[in-house]
Image (cartoon, rainbow, N blue to C red; front, side, top):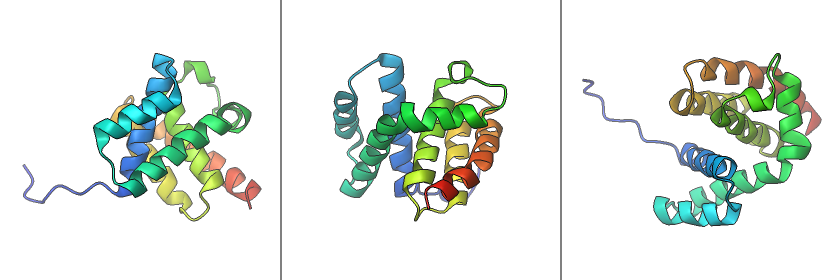
Length: 147
């Protein structure tokens, strides 16, 4: 057992984790987005800044999922189709690609690292490597096209 105190979770990581949970519930449970968001806000008791960023991520992903994010995933996921990917991986990638495109002040390496950590924490043993590889391939194209 380590004598070091547990590391505190950054506010944005917390927002990303809750966004991932919400997107998972929406996709798997086929539930109304606003209903799931409100439920999560009641449970999580997030600070306003964290709640706002979480909402922005969820609404941004949902707004751009079919027209932009999913086609990007398919473009860079060599040998994989969306329906073959674990639900968690799909949604981690959607969040990260949304941030790469629409959050230019967040450094690319931070977005990629956060996505990899989420995939490792919530998905399969191979998910971290898969997410890392896809995002590294997509990041340059996504960031260049949004400038």
